[in-house]
Image (cartoon, rainbow, N blue to C red):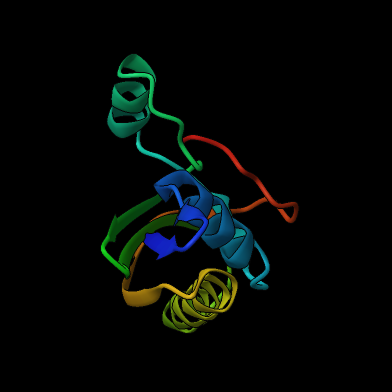
Length: 122
């Protein structure tokens, strides 16, 4: 996002939006955490790109697309949890940044049998 004013420019980095999305996802009951696949995590590490552990944000003008890789707790209703994650991410980003969220794609990467939140890269 880039906003021009008479005193300068305001830009919001993809990583900032990714952090907002990660926090919003973690707020949902039934989420065990976010995770990246080994290949995408390794690729980002090699090219020096900061990751938001399982969240990818792509900003184009004032539109943003989010890809959230999540792990859910065993026994949770996966479609219900994914829907709540989508809504909370969209609302959080739009409220905090003024960006228009055009898509929140949720990919369920795994099931956790642990009762604690796990922000692991699996």
